[in-house]
Image (cartoon, rainbow, N blue to C red):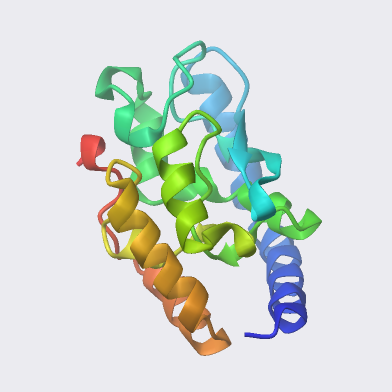
Length: 188
């Protein structure tokens, strides 16, 4: 896929999404702040394109002060009541539209891993996955594959990189909006 076209599509869609969704984002900020102590946003260092770290922005779905671990390693008890709803409908991902807007992420691509996940990083490095921007949603996510299986994840991510197209991206976006995908193994 032409990366300039993908970037233009990502920028326009993220900007449009932020404008259209701004009332919903504001309501979610208020609900999160009222439901538990702490800020509404959760900032976490993730591995981006060419293995460059960036700050990923999400709505906070866990209690403030919980350990910084991957979602598949999070204890259910750490998740706030509103956090369960946010995760179930993938609303916790909406602030990542800001990451897309500034170019740290794409709408579709391999989900960004944590700096503390060396097995995932090594498997993705071996498959050339870091050649593209990570995405808010991706093929592995919709296939029910999370970071608890690094080699399987890297294989699916590499398939996406090799066969990326605007049509495929649109199909994955529609699948995400329709709620396809299993989410994280520990939270099923």
